[in-house]
Figure 1 (cartoon, rainbow, N blue to C red):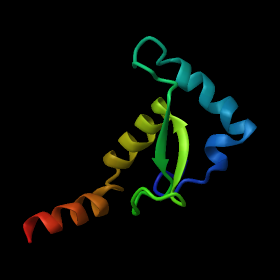
Figure 2: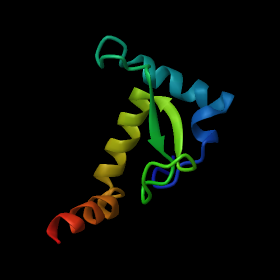
Figure 3: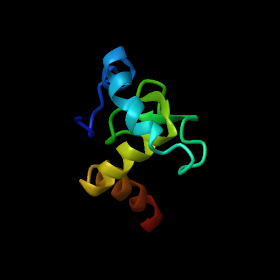
Figure 4: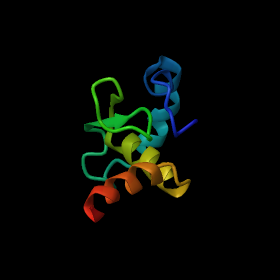
Length: 87
């Protein structure tokens, strides 16, 4: 899975749903509201806009954002958010 810029088909196609379902179900009873919907950025270098978001389950959001953080994909957004605070 290419996590920096997501292809919506990797989350929403029938084949993708079959792959994600067993992973997501492992968190039932472990993560509260694991299957509730949340907005997920498609391109992690950009903010939350209508064009850059997709509706995903909470556990998909956690999995992808944790992977993005571990790989440093969110550093650009983090650093740009810190800049105005310094001014």
